[in-house]
Image 1: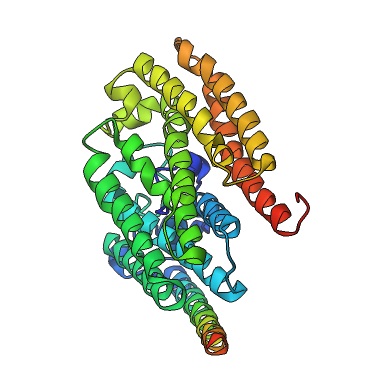
Image 2: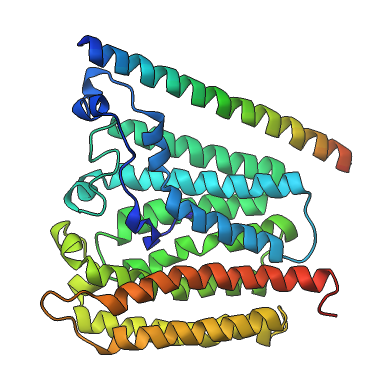
Length: 42
Length: 330
């Protein structure tokens, strides 16, 4: 792997980790909210 | 739908996701362990198709009688979108070889070598599976079952089975794109009644003239990929006549929700006017024959209007319901 490719590798991995993290965080918030709504409806 | 995504031709303008020169230079590098860019995963979900899927699903949800908690409603639409995205990714996984042969699809992530084929498959399965589970647990199990069936219909029945075998692929496969309003409706009511079935039927009838308008002008692409689309298999004249036939059926069908009392006059008159224009635009497409070097203007016009048609028709459906609920039409 050339230094350029290695840099690109790191950039992609970092960006993917960030996106996955944000998606997971979004789901945590969504599931929490759904739980509150479901409990409130009972 | 979604997928639900449907053999929806609105993906026609899907272009490559911009990549840096470095990324482009190593585009064929997944085998060397280069991870795919997140934008490539996003492109797998066919975002442009998803817009129409989300819109019709949301309209089905908003037009349904009854109420749904906004959070649960949001979850339902999110699940429809995720399932549509998953179905789109599975479609691209299966058709990677075909996509590489067509100008319209050659810029997709798999033909460009931006990721491993099995990664697209796993991503699609994860999205669709998660969407169905969340829909069942948070919204309604009947909606989840229809959602799961729509993905199965699009990926297995349409993509794997019908598309490479029969020129009727779009007609039958069009059902896949007709699911979102049905699922949105069921999310609220928990049951399948005549009204959501009519909405399903409207999209079903709309799909052939919408898609064939595109297929007529990208005919060489499909021929190169050996896909038996109607213009290639049955010929241009037959395709044009059939477009006219479906467009004529769409006219009375689109106003049926009004005629049976399922909607008010706002929807009814909008549907009537839109469907008359749609039919009028199909007439020149249905009656003419393309010549050498034809610009295919009537086909392009029909295709562009067909997308607008669906947006305005479903928008009118929601407006009709909202105004009725708030007492404006009383």
